Length: 194
Image (cartoon, rainbow, N blue to C red):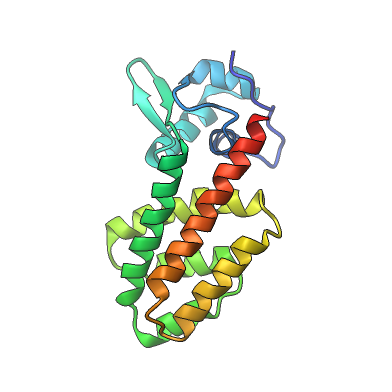
């Protein structure tokens, strides 16, 4: 039987499942049913159904026949590619920003605010959707579980400097930031395995 922590008032089924999948507590390939998941969380099937639909949209689960879902596999290579793709798409999107938007983006000191502003200003719906998922799901998880990580903070600072200085190194700075985020998520997952 699936073992998940019971919900507290301030938490949602989506938050619990998202955290469990990203941390590796719910392993990739595991088949989930609404009924079993609802029982594990101590809630009705409705919030579980809604959570699974949102997780499917984000690519963390895939739909199977008969109201079943399978948890997507998040191995090291997939995690690396998610953050590499984030860096590439964000860099390309920023190239299309006007000077004022790039300057405003470089002034954000909070990483979540930086990424929210970035996504809000992207014109391409495909880039916007992908970056919304990465910066709304993966990034907050990594930042929450690596509080005070100087390597992430330094990479973000270098990214902001490259952006502020209109540097040719923006792509490299974003790639490094993505690499550090991926490395940190992989480390978080490995620590949870112990």
